[in-house]
Image (cartoon, rainbow, N blue to C red; front, side, top):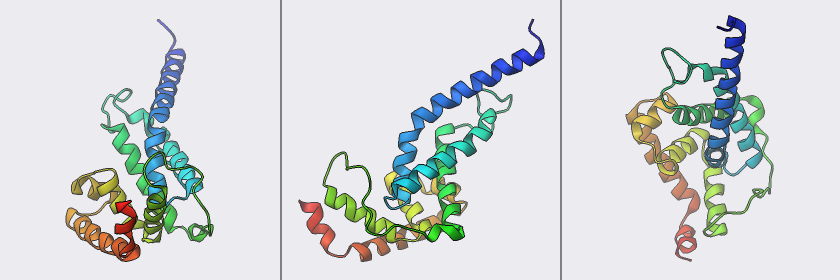
Length: 184
């Protein structure tokens, strides 16, 4: 039987390896969601993903693989929750008002109409952060009202109302020209 220190070190290495595998598998979906939340600001999206993964790593010992009583049943869902909360807390900071002007996202759209994609990202970027978060969670990530409410620490009724109002705001931002872009 090994001394307790060696056993603890082996568990720590295994936990780190499992976290690295988890982070590698979830980085792209988190980044896509972060890009939508930030309105296409790829640099801020990268920062948010890094911050979210850092916060998750601190709590990683609570996943079902390591804890006697796991507190994180769905690590992938937890990762998106942490990402959205990191985004909302970042937007509340005083320094979050800095935003580049006339910036184009670094990457090209993988498919579809790039002009439509840029128009939608620009419209999302003009919404308030919480409105953006509701729309991304409900319609991009296809989360239920209850899941969205849990992530945003709100009630389902408030999420429904906010989604309705945010859709109205994005329609007002997009105007009538969105139909022409979508028909192409």
